[in-house]
Length: 191
Image 1 (cartoon, rainbow, N blue to C red):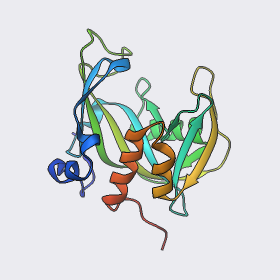
Image 2: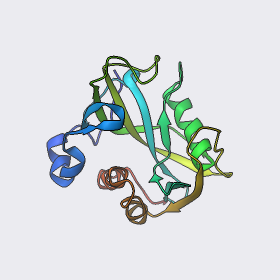
Image 3: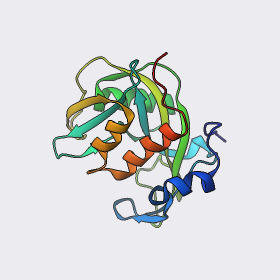
């Protein structure tokens, strides 16, 4: 069983600040009923991970695809991939960034599938977690943009409030995740 950051674990408290984030919903493209939590989760059941990636200047790394989607870097776990490897791969592919330290998990969507089988054979089913973590990162290159993946055309490093504002039009969930991490005290400006 994995763990979520020590400041987390109080869904009642955080849902009062972020009611839309904690509202149960159905995600049609995934065929899943989802609910948000800051409680401890089983990290072995994480199928997706997105990062509030923090630069040395304390800014949040955000991406924009050629379709205009705005999002936090992250994605789906590959077979036998550790969460650290997943984070490293997705940061380089989507943001041209290098993971520069440990992951600090702080929340997740609990995703309960209505489908008869998993999205990919190696992924957990019927329950999976779509986790969120804060991690230090350095933008060191252009995004890797592998074939068949989202093609990222813009990577920005913005102060938390500006990152959330940038994300809101296309991905209000990721915007609220940034605001939650900030309110939890997980985003710190350099000393």
